[in-house]
Length: 173
Image (cartoon, rainbow, N blue to C red; front, top):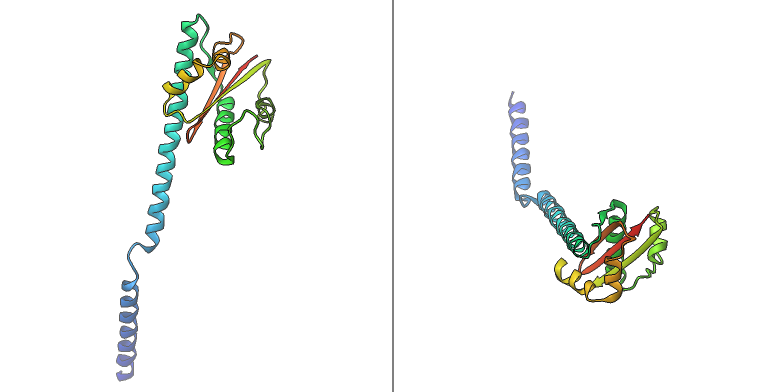
């Protein structure tokens, strides 16, 4: 019986030391990275929402310009919008500002790669404007960009925004 009490006491001592050792580990060690990951995901969701809102604002402003000129509004094309966003991201990440991408080639090559069919196509790009109103105003003040926005042959639009880079893709079928 004495040996049994001694073993129980030793186990109790070992358990106490283990409990104190575990208590010394900073609380939330594993949860800190989980909290950071959660915060990062929520920031990404907020930024994705901002990108979508800016793209939608550009479409609304472009359609306002078109209807003022007696033209039909453009319809948002989902795959064209994805392409436009990818082009904006590509320009930002690859450090260029041009219609021809080092990765994708011309806008028409990129449309082909995204399996987008068209009879007529065009692209507007811009960099640095801080709002949808500012970028559409700048495009409308540029003869070539304005011609794309007001082209009666275009029926579909895709708009992408990423870190100050704006892309409009237009197609007509």
